[in-house]
Length: 143
Image (cartoon, helix red, strand yellow):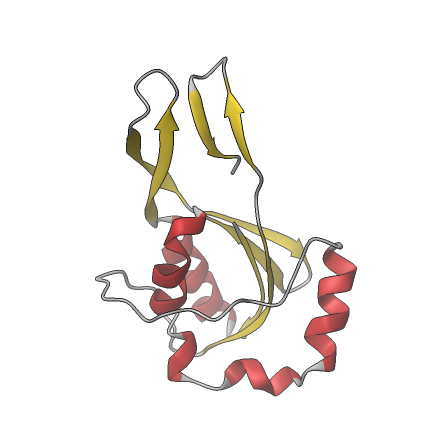
């Protein structure tokens, strides 16, 4: 899954936020084709800058609730500062598969990212396709 957001703040605070995001490890579930069992492995979240101030964060889809909880999205109303029209236009600019962020359920987590002095403007998400890859022996989300 790809989460797209705008980021704003003092340079030292946004740099610190980005470092925290880059060090997060997520549990990725994939099905072993030989055994039929779900295997869980650790995968590092990938933070990419798309265009000036807009970022993409890639992580396993099953971790969506935890990512949003970690970002403390419900604790503030920063996302509404853009209004409804601008995120729509930005989603269109990022591609036709970027959609509005779905609702999420706050979950217990011990994950932390430094958010002081940083504003996050949610834009949307894009789902990865799931695929059976015989060569690797797994049915998995193609991160």
